[in-house]
Image 1 (cartoon, helix red, strand yellow):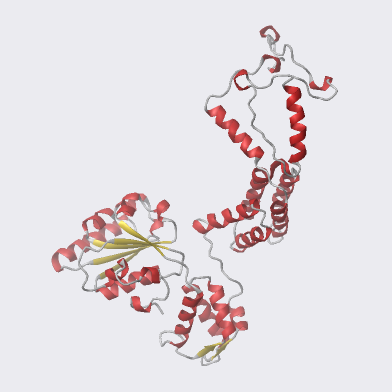
Image 2 (cartoon, rainbow, N blue to C red):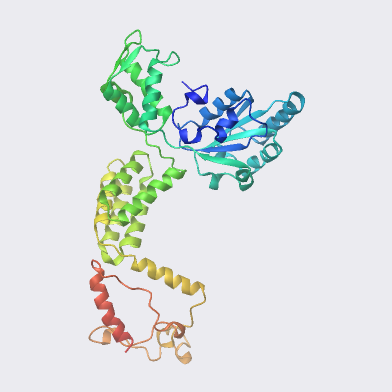
Length: 421
Protein backbone atom coordinates (compact mmCIF):
# COMPACT_ATOMS: atom_id res chain seq x y z
CA UNK A 1 0.00 0.00 0.00
CA UNK A 2 2.98 2.35 -0.17
CA UNK A 3 2.08 5.34 -2.39
CA UNK A 4 3.84 5.48 -5.74
CA UNK A 5 3.50 9.25 -6.19
CA UNK A 6 3.21 12.34 -4.00
CA UNK A 7 -0.44 12.67 -5.04
CA UNK A 8 -1.24 9.42 -3.21
CA UNK A 9 0.44 10.46 0.04
CA UNK A 10 -1.96 11.00 2.94
CA UNK A 11 -0.89 13.59 5.46
CA UNK A 12 2.17 15.87 5.53
CA UNK A 13 0.37 18.37 3.33
CA UNK A 14 2.38 21.19 4.91
CA UNK A 15 5.39 19.72 3.05
CA UNK A 16 3.57 19.02 -0.22
CA UNK A 17 2.17 22.40 -1.18
CA UNK A 18 2.81 23.55 -4.78
CA UNK A 19 6.32 24.89 -5.09
CA UNK A 20 7.56 23.27 -1.90
CA UNK A 21 11.08 21.73 -1.89
CA UNK A 22 9.77 18.14 -1.97
CA UNK A 23 7.39 18.87 -4.84
CA UNK A 24 10.19 20.55 -6.80
CA UNK A 25 12.45 17.60 -6.08
CA UNK A 26 9.86 15.25 -7.59
CA UNK A 27 9.42 17.34 -10.74
CA UNK A 28 11.02 15.71 -13.82
CA UNK A 29 11.44 19.13 -15.43
CA UNK A 30 13.06 20.73 -12.38
CA UNK A 31 16.50 22.23 -12.76
CA UNK A 32 19.42 20.07 -11.57
CA UNK A 33 21.21 20.77 -8.32
CA UNK A 34 18.30 20.13 -5.99
CA UNK A 35 19.03 20.54 -2.30
CA UNK A 36 19.43 17.56 0.02
CA UNK A 37 16.84 17.13 2.76
CA UNK A 38 16.59 15.55 6.20
CA UNK A 39 13.16 14.18 7.07
CA UNK A 40 12.57 14.17 10.82
CA UNK A 41 9.47 12.60 12.28
CA UNK A 42 7.95 9.73 14.29
CA UNK A 43 7.78 6.20 12.86
CA UNK A 44 5.08 5.50 10.29
CA UNK A 45 4.63 9.09 9.13
CA UNK A 46 5.90 8.65 5.56
CA UNK A 47 9.65 9.33 5.47
CA UNK A 48 10.50 6.32 3.29
CA UNK A 49 7.32 6.77 1.30
CA UNK A 50 8.17 10.37 0.41
CA UNK A 51 11.71 9.44 -0.65
CA UNK A 52 10.55 6.62 -2.93
CA UNK A 53 7.69 8.66 -4.39
CA UNK A 54 10.08 11.51 -5.20
CA UNK A 55 12.48 9.11 -6.91
CA UNK A 56 9.73 7.54 -9.03
CA UNK A 57 8.18 10.87 -10.00
CA UNK A 58 11.48 12.54 -10.84
CA UNK A 59 12.91 9.64 -12.81
CA UNK A 60 16.18 9.85 -10.90
CA UNK A 61 18.24 6.84 -9.87
CA UNK A 62 17.28 5.72 -6.41
CA UNK A 63 19.72 4.11 -4.01
CA UNK A 64 18.67 3.11 -0.51
CA UNK A 65 20.97 2.47 2.45
CA UNK A 66 20.14 1.64 6.02
CA UNK A 67 22.35 3.06 8.74
CA UNK A 68 21.87 -0.20 10.62
CA UNK A 69 23.74 -2.28 8.04
CA UNK A 70 25.74 0.18 5.93
CA UNK A 71 29.28 1.31 6.71
CA UNK A 72 31.70 3.94 5.43
CA UNK A 73 32.78 1.61 2.58
CA UNK A 74 29.17 1.29 1.36
CA UNK A 75 28.70 5.06 1.43
CA UNK A 76 31.88 5.68 -0.56
CA UNK A 77 30.91 3.07 -3.15
CA UNK A 78 27.54 4.76 -3.64
CA UNK A 79 29.24 8.16 -3.99
CA UNK A 80 31.72 6.84 -6.56
CA UNK A 81 28.99 5.16 -8.57
CA UNK A 82 26.81 8.28 -8.44
CA UNK A 83 29.67 10.43 -9.72
CA UNK A 84 30.26 7.98 -12.56
CA UNK A 85 26.57 7.93 -13.52
CA UNK A 86 26.46 11.73 -13.52
CA UNK A 87 29.63 12.21 -15.58
CA UNK A 88 29.01 9.43 -18.13
CA UNK A 89 25.25 9.41 -18.51
CA UNK A 90 24.05 12.67 -16.95
CA UNK A 91 21.94 10.68 -14.46
CA UNK A 92 21.10 12.21 -11.10
CA UNK A 93 21.06 9.92 -8.04
CA UNK A 94 18.88 10.12 -4.96
CA UNK A 95 20.48 8.46 -1.94
CA UNK A 96 17.92 7.58 0.69
CA UNK A 97 19.58 6.94 4.04
CA UNK A 98 17.23 5.53 6.66
CA UNK A 99 17.91 6.08 10.37
CA UNK A 100 20.83 8.43 9.82
CA UNK A 101 20.99 9.04 13.57
CA UNK A 102 22.57 5.58 13.86
CA UNK A 103 25.53 6.65 11.72
CA UNK A 104 28.72 7.56 13.56
CA UNK A 105 30.42 10.91 12.96
CA UNK A 106 32.94 9.23 10.65
CA UNK A 107 30.15 7.62 8.62
CA UNK A 108 28.30 10.93 8.33
CA UNK A 109 31.54 12.66 7.30
CA UNK A 110 31.76 10.23 4.38
CA UNK A 111 28.51 11.70 3.03
CA UNK A 112 29.82 15.26 2.86
CA UNK A 113 31.80 15.14 -0.43
CA UNK A 114 28.88 13.66 -2.34
CA UNK A 115 26.37 16.13 -0.92
CA UNK A 116 28.63 19.15 -1.30
CA UNK A 117 29.69 18.32 -4.88
CA UNK A 118 26.21 17.33 -6.01
CA UNK A 119 27.06 13.72 -6.77
CA UNK A 120 23.91 12.69 -4.90
CA UNK A 121 20.75 14.28 -3.60
CA UNK A 122 20.59 13.01 -0.03
CA UNK A 123 17.23 12.28 1.54
CA UNK A 124 17.97 11.22 5.09
CA UNK A 125 15.34 9.99 7.55
CA UNK A 126 15.51 10.07 11.31
CA UNK A 127 13.19 9.64 14.28
CA UNK A 128 15.56 11.56 16.57
CA UNK A 129 16.25 15.27 16.79
CA UNK A 130 18.84 15.99 14.06
CA UNK A 131 20.32 18.79 16.16
CA UNK A 132 21.71 16.10 18.44
CA UNK A 133 22.19 13.19 16.04
CA UNK A 134 23.43 14.73 12.76
CA UNK A 135 26.79 16.49 12.38
CA UNK A 136 26.66 20.26 11.84
CA UNK A 137 28.33 20.31 8.39
CA UNK A 138 25.68 17.92 7.05
CA UNK A 139 22.86 19.87 8.70
CA UNK A 140 24.07 23.12 7.18
CA UNK A 141 24.09 21.57 3.69
CA UNK A 142 20.59 20.10 3.98
CA UNK A 143 17.06 21.33 4.39
CA UNK A 144 15.45 20.05 7.59
CA UNK A 145 11.80 19.10 7.15
CA UNK A 146 9.66 17.97 10.10
CA UNK A 147 6.93 15.37 9.61
CA UNK A 148 3.94 15.29 11.93
CA UNK A 149 2.02 12.26 13.20
CA UNK A 150 -0.86 11.49 10.86
CA UNK A 151 -4.25 12.84 11.84
CA UNK A 152 -7.26 10.60 12.42
CA UNK A 153 -8.64 11.79 9.08
CA UNK A 154 -5.42 10.79 7.30
CA UNK A 155 -5.43 7.36 8.94
CA UNK A 156 -9.10 6.84 8.07
CA UNK A 157 -8.30 7.50 4.41
CA UNK A 158 -5.39 5.04 4.54
CA UNK A 159 -7.41 2.25 6.15
CA UNK A 160 -10.37 2.67 3.80
CA UNK A 161 -8.02 2.73 0.81
CA UNK A 162 -6.29 -0.46 2.01
CA UNK A 163 -9.65 -2.21 2.38
CA UNK A 164 -10.75 -1.40 -1.17
CA UNK A 165 -7.49 -1.27 -3.15
CA UNK A 166 -6.33 -4.28 -5.19
CA UNK A 167 -2.91 -3.88 -3.57
CA UNK A 168 -4.56 -4.29 -0.18
CA UNK A 169 -7.55 -6.39 0.87
CA UNK A 170 -9.26 -5.88 -2.50
CA UNK A 171 -12.71 -5.43 -0.99
CA UNK A 172 -12.83 -8.92 0.50
CA UNK A 173 -13.61 -7.58 3.96
CA UNK A 174 -15.75 -4.77 5.28
CA UNK A 175 -14.97 -2.68 8.34
CA UNK A 176 -17.64 -1.58 10.80
CA UNK A 177 -17.46 2.08 11.92
CA UNK A 178 -16.55 1.12 15.49
CA UNK A 179 -13.75 -1.11 14.18
CA UNK A 180 -12.46 1.68 11.93
CA UNK A 181 -12.42 4.04 14.90
CA UNK A 182 -10.53 1.48 16.99
CA UNK A 183 -7.92 0.93 14.26
CA UNK A 184 -7.34 4.67 13.91
CA UNK A 185 -7.17 5.16 17.66
CA UNK A 186 -4.71 2.32 18.19
CA UNK A 187 -2.44 3.59 15.42
CA UNK A 188 -1.69 6.82 17.31
CA UNK A 189 -0.63 8.68 14.17
CA UNK A 190 1.41 5.78 12.71
CA UNK A 191 0.33 4.60 9.24
CA UNK A 192 2.39 1.41 9.42
CA UNK A 193 0.77 0.46 12.70
CA UNK A 194 -2.72 1.13 11.31
CA UNK A 195 -2.14 -1.13 8.29
CA UNK A 196 -0.55 -3.85 10.41
CA UNK A 197 -3.51 -3.83 12.79
CA UNK A 198 -5.94 -3.89 9.84
CA UNK A 199 -4.21 -6.91 8.33
CA UNK A 200 -4.24 -8.77 11.66
CA UNK A 201 -7.92 -7.97 12.22
CA UNK A 202 -8.77 -9.14 8.70
CA UNK A 203 -7.17 -12.51 9.43
CA UNK A 204 -9.26 -12.85 12.60
CA UNK A 205 -12.49 -11.82 10.87
CA UNK A 206 -12.02 -13.67 7.58
CA UNK A 207 -13.45 -17.03 6.66
CA UNK A 208 -11.71 -19.72 4.62
CA UNK A 209 -11.88 -17.44 1.58
CA UNK A 210 -10.54 -14.45 3.53
CA UNK A 211 -13.91 -12.69 3.41
CA UNK A 212 -15.81 -11.20 6.34
CA UNK A 213 -16.62 -8.09 8.31
CA UNK A 214 -14.18 -6.63 10.81
CA UNK A 215 -15.80 -5.65 14.11
CA UNK A 216 -14.37 -3.85 17.11
CA UNK A 217 -14.12 -7.25 18.80
CA UNK A 218 -11.94 -8.55 15.97
CA UNK A 219 -9.66 -5.53 16.35
CA UNK A 220 -9.46 -6.16 20.09
CA UNK A 221 -8.49 -9.79 19.53
CA UNK A 222 -5.88 -8.89 16.93
CA UNK A 223 -4.32 -6.03 18.84
CA UNK A 224 -4.51 -6.47 22.59
CA UNK A 225 -3.30 -2.99 23.43
CA UNK A 226 -2.09 0.22 21.87
CA UNK A 227 1.66 0.12 21.29
CA UNK A 228 2.74 3.52 22.48
CA UNK A 229 5.18 5.54 20.45
CA UNK A 230 7.96 5.71 23.00
CA UNK A 231 11.61 5.15 22.13
CA UNK A 232 13.57 4.79 25.34
CA UNK A 233 16.60 6.29 23.60
CA UNK A 234 14.85 9.08 21.71
CA UNK A 235 12.93 12.32 22.05
CA UNK A 236 9.64 10.76 23.15
CA UNK A 237 11.39 9.22 26.16
CA UNK A 238 12.60 12.60 27.35
CA UNK A 239 9.35 14.38 26.47
CA UNK A 240 7.19 11.98 28.47
CA UNK A 241 9.52 11.97 31.47
CA UNK A 242 9.65 15.77 31.37
CA UNK A 243 5.86 15.97 31.22
CA UNK A 244 5.61 13.50 34.12
CA UNK A 245 7.84 15.57 36.43
CA UNK A 246 6.29 18.89 35.38
CA UNK A 247 2.79 17.55 35.98
CA UNK A 248 3.80 16.55 39.53
CA UNK A 249 5.41 19.95 40.06
CA UNK A 250 2.29 21.63 38.72
CA UNK A 251 0.04 19.56 41.04
CA UNK A 252 -1.93 17.99 38.15
CA UNK A 253 -2.34 14.50 39.54
CA UNK A 254 -4.38 13.23 36.58
CA UNK A 255 -1.75 14.27 34.04
CA UNK A 256 1.00 12.79 36.22
CA UNK A 257 -0.81 9.43 36.44
CA UNK A 258 -1.37 9.51 32.66
CA UNK A 259 2.33 9.94 31.89
CA UNK A 260 3.18 7.30 34.49
CA UNK A 261 0.88 4.89 32.65
CA UNK A 262 2.54 5.70 29.32
CA UNK A 263 5.97 4.95 30.72
CA UNK A 264 4.82 1.70 32.32
CA UNK A 265 3.04 0.47 29.19
CA UNK A 266 6.03 1.36 27.03
CA UNK A 267 8.25 -0.85 29.17
CA UNK A 268 10.21 1.89 30.90
CA UNK A 269 12.52 0.66 33.66
CA UNK A 270 10.48 1.08 36.89
CA UNK A 271 13.68 1.88 38.77
CA UNK A 272 14.16 4.88 36.49
CA UNK A 273 10.63 6.08 37.29
CA UNK A 274 11.25 5.56 41.02
CA UNK A 275 14.47 7.57 40.86
CA UNK A 276 12.64 10.44 39.20
CA UNK A 277 10.03 10.39 41.97
CA UNK A 278 12.74 10.55 44.66
CA UNK A 279 14.36 13.51 42.89
CA UNK A 280 11.00 15.25 42.52
CA UNK A 281 10.22 14.77 46.22
CA UNK A 282 13.46 16.47 47.22
CA UNK A 283 13.56 19.12 44.49
CA UNK A 284 9.95 20.26 44.19
CA UNK A 285 8.44 19.45 47.60
CA UNK A 286 11.24 19.54 50.13
CA UNK A 287 10.33 20.65 53.64
CA UNK A 288 6.86 21.76 52.56
CA UNK A 289 6.09 18.07 53.19
CA UNK A 290 9.09 16.08 54.52
CA UNK A 291 6.98 12.91 54.29
CA UNK A 292 7.09 13.13 50.48
CA UNK A 293 10.70 11.96 50.29
CA UNK A 294 9.95 9.12 52.69
CA UNK A 295 7.07 7.94 50.50
CA UNK A 296 9.10 8.26 47.28
CA UNK A 297 11.98 6.21 48.73
CA UNK A 298 9.50 3.66 50.07
CA UNK A 299 7.98 3.35 46.58
CA UNK A 300 11.44 2.79 45.10
CA UNK A 301 12.16 0.08 47.68
CA UNK A 302 8.76 -1.52 47.08
CA UNK A 303 9.31 -1.68 43.32
CA UNK A 304 12.72 -3.28 43.82
CA UNK A 305 11.20 -5.75 46.28
CA UNK A 306 8.03 -6.85 44.47
CA UNK A 307 8.86 -6.05 40.83
CA UNK A 308 6.36 -5.44 38.05
CA UNK A 309 3.48 -5.42 37.26
CA UNK A 310 2.50 -5.00 40.94
CA UNK A 311 5.16 -2.30 41.28
CA UNK A 312 2.90 0.03 39.33
CA UNK A 313 0.74 0.41 42.46
CA UNK A 314 3.33 1.96 44.81
CA UNK A 315 4.57 4.06 41.90
CA UNK A 316 1.05 5.37 41.39
CA UNK A 317 0.61 5.98 45.11
CA UNK A 318 3.82 7.98 45.32
CA UNK A 319 2.96 9.91 42.16
CA UNK A 320 -0.47 10.84 43.49
CA UNK A 321 0.97 11.90 46.87
CA UNK A 322 3.70 14.05 45.35
CA UNK A 323 1.33 15.70 42.88
CA UNK A 324 -1.25 16.65 45.52
CA UNK A 325 0.94 17.80 48.41
CA UNK A 326 2.42 21.24 49.13
CA UNK A 327 5.43 22.29 47.04
CA UNK A 328 8.65 24.13 47.85
CA UNK A 329 11.98 24.21 46.04
CA UNK A 330 13.69 26.18 48.83
CA UNK A 331 16.16 23.40 49.73
CA UNK A 332 17.01 22.88 46.05
CA UNK A 333 17.60 26.62 45.57
CA UNK A 334 19.66 26.76 48.75
CA UNK A 335 22.17 24.06 47.80
CA UNK A 336 22.60 25.43 44.27
CA UNK A 337 23.24 28.93 45.64
CA UNK A 338 25.79 27.57 48.13
CA UNK A 339 27.55 25.55 45.42
CA UNK A 340 27.68 28.65 43.21
CA UNK A 341 29.38 30.58 46.00
CA UNK A 342 31.91 27.82 46.61
CA UNK A 343 32.73 27.53 42.90
CA UNK A 344 33.18 31.29 42.72
CA UNK A 345 35.69 31.19 45.58
CA UNK A 346 33.18 32.34 48.18
CA UNK A 347 34.58 30.40 51.11
CA UNK A 348 37.07 30.95 53.89
CA UNK A 349 38.58 29.24 56.89
CA UNK A 350 36.29 27.48 59.30
CA UNK A 351 35.91 29.64 62.46
CA UNK A 352 38.29 28.44 65.19
CA UNK A 353 35.63 27.69 67.83
CA UNK A 354 34.02 25.03 65.62
CA UNK A 355 37.18 23.45 64.20
CA UNK A 356 38.13 19.88 65.19
CA UNK A 357 39.86 20.00 68.56
CA UNK A 358 40.35 16.28 69.18
CA UNK A 359 43.80 15.67 67.73
CA UNK A 360 47.07 16.41 69.51
CA UNK A 361 48.14 20.03 69.24
CA UNK A 362 44.69 21.29 68.14
CA UNK A 363 44.10 23.27 71.33
CA UNK A 364 47.54 24.87 71.03
CA UNK A 365 46.35 26.19 67.65
CA UNK A 366 43.20 27.59 69.26
CA UNK A 367 40.84 25.04 67.74
CA UNK A 368 37.63 24.72 69.72
CA UNK A 369 38.46 27.66 71.97
CA UNK A 370 35.32 29.57 72.87
CA UNK A 371 32.94 26.95 71.47
CA UNK A 372 29.47 27.16 72.99
CA UNK A 373 27.70 23.81 73.42
CA UNK A 374 24.05 24.35 72.30
CA UNK A 375 22.67 21.66 74.61
CA UNK A 376 23.82 23.68 77.62
CA UNK A 377 21.26 26.32 76.66
CA UNK A 378 17.63 25.83 77.60
CA UNK A 379 16.40 26.56 74.08
CA UNK A 380 19.13 24.49 72.43
CA UNK A 381 20.45 27.41 70.35
CA UNK A 382 23.24 29.83 71.22
CA UNK A 383 24.63 32.96 69.66
CA UNK A 384 27.64 31.72 67.71
CA UNK A 385 29.33 32.16 64.32
CA UNK A 386 29.30 29.08 62.10
CA UNK A 387 29.93 30.51 58.62
CA UNK A 388 33.42 31.67 57.61
CA UNK A 389 34.10 35.37 58.11
CA UNK A 390 33.68 36.05 54.39
CA UNK A 391 30.12 34.72 54.39
CA UNK A 392 28.74 36.04 57.68
CA UNK A 393 25.10 37.03 57.14
CA UNK A 394 24.75 35.01 53.91
CA UNK A 395 21.41 33.22 53.70
CA UNK A 396 20.86 30.30 51.38
CA UNK A 397 17.75 28.60 52.68
CA UNK A 398 14.61 30.76 52.52
CA UNK A 399 11.57 28.63 53.40
CA UNK A 400 8.25 29.39 51.75
CA UNK A 401 4.96 30.03 53.46
CA UNK A 402 3.58 26.68 52.22
CA UNK A 403 2.70 23.43 53.95
CA UNK A 404 4.96 22.31 56.77
CA UNK A 405 7.57 24.82 55.63
CA UNK A 406 5.35 27.54 57.05
CA UNK A 407 6.22 26.29 60.53
CA UNK A 408 9.86 25.90 59.55
CA UNK A 409 9.96 29.55 58.45
CA UNK A 410 8.65 30.80 61.78
CA UNK A 411 11.04 28.61 63.77
CA UNK A 412 14.00 29.51 61.54
CA UNK A 413 13.41 33.22 62.03
CA UNK A 414 13.66 32.78 65.80
CA UNK A 415 16.80 30.60 65.42
CA UNK A 416 18.52 33.16 63.22
CA UNK A 417 17.80 35.97 65.65
CA UNK A 418 19.48 33.95 68.43
CA UNK A 419 22.45 32.95 66.24
CA UNK A 420 23.06 36.56 65.28
CA UNK A 421 22.81 37.68 68.91
